[in-house]
Length: 285
Image (tube, rainbow, N blue to C red; front, side):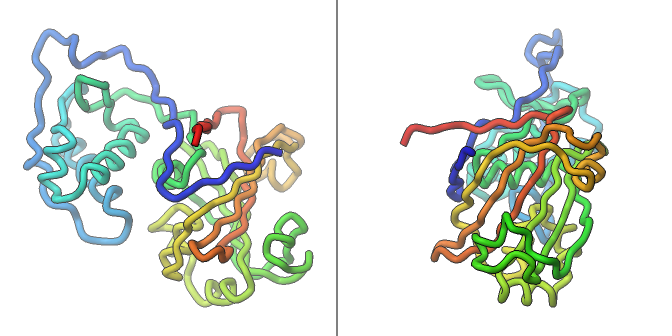
C-alpha cells in the first residue's frame, strides 16, 4: 500500500483540462476584452475568498453572455481590482478552469469557454487539490451520527472496534455521476462536539468534509497522511456509487492532523474508476 503525506499549501498535478478546438487567438476578429472593473466587488458571506471571487467572475460572464474566446483581465489586474493577492486570484481562476468556465493558455491569457466538458481527471496530491475537487463537484450527505467504529479506523483513533464514534458518510458526484464515497470518523471529544452542531448544514457551505469540521471547530489541518490501495466494491458501497458489486475501486484512507499533531479526522474514500481517473505528483525534496 502506498502512503503519501499532504502538507498544507503543497500543490500537485492539476486536473487534466479538456481540449478545445477553438483557439481564441486564431479567430479572425480580435477577442473581446473584459475590463476588471466590470466584475464589481466581492460578495460578503461564507466560503473561502478565492471561491467568492470565482463566483463573482462566473456570474458576470453568465449575465453578460460573453462569447467563447472573450479575454479576461490579467491576474495582476484582477488582484488590484479585488484588492487581494495574486495567489488568491490564481486559485480562483484555477477553480473556474476546473469548472469549465474559462480556459487558460500559457503566454496568451485567460478566455471565456462555453462548450467545455467537466473534468474527468482529479488531482489528489495536495490539500489544495482536495479543496478544488470539493468546489467543482456535488455533495450528498448519506448519514451522520454515532456509529460503531470499524476496524480500519480504530487504531488511528486509539479506540476499540465497535466503540461508538461520531461518523459522517457522504457521496460526491460530477454531473449526477457518483465517483467518491467517503466515511469519516472523529476522536471521542471532538465527536461529542460535532454531535451538537448541524454539520449537514455546514457541508452545504463547505463541501470538503474536513473543511466543514475546521469551520465549526476552529481547528485547522496541517498535514494529511494518505494510504492508497485498491478493493472490490461491497454491496453497500456499490449501491452508493451506482456500480455493480465487486467493481474494482481506488481506496484511500486519510488521517488529518493539526499542527500540534492531534488527529482531527480519520476517513476512508472509495473512488470509482469507470468514468474518472486520478492524478498525483511526486516531488523531489
